Image 1 (cartoon, rainbow, N blue to C red):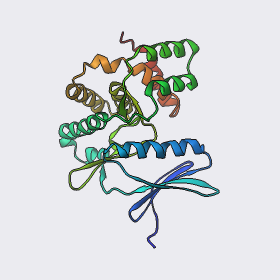
Image 2: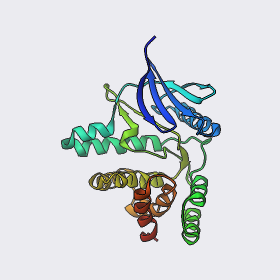
Image 3: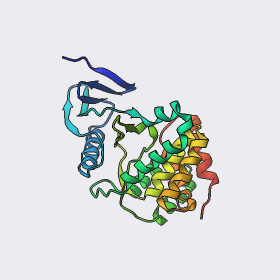
Image 4: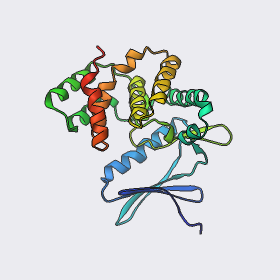
Length: 249
């Protein structure tokens, strides 16, 4: 039998490949409901016809819970970008085209984005006044129902040898406003200190989506506030500057 190859290993979680299957292994640190929800998200998005790995089964042992899915061959788009800086424009166009293709889908059984944001803000390490302001902003934003990945960035996009693509990691998927997801992708570039890519991304996204930048900007304080639940102290300090400074009314 083919030995498993470790693709990624993090605290409490690893991703391994064996032949045509990928094993995403969660130890008992992860609530069972979170793991099952991730698998359910992925199955529902796969049923929409989008190019993503198919969930095969879920396995349980005393030590872990594992999502077994199909292995898709390809190269991460962030690696392609790093290795081909002369192709920065076309590659950014490709990233945005793939994101817009995913956002064109509607997957009604996913959790609503705005409800998830309200929960995240309630749990975030924020001053009560800021928390109230962000809750008010969320409630005032339009309620839309398009497929949103929740962590859309080049590392989660595979480019296949035949020119096709696949999108990975649907643990944070919701149905909501595509402009909010664009705000999150922009901030993810900024968190990596890839400022040129961040600006190129947002300019390209707004042009292709037919949005004014202000429509994305209005989501930035909200998304930054939600994102403070994650990351180290440096990232939280960076995000709080966006929460506190930007007012796009």
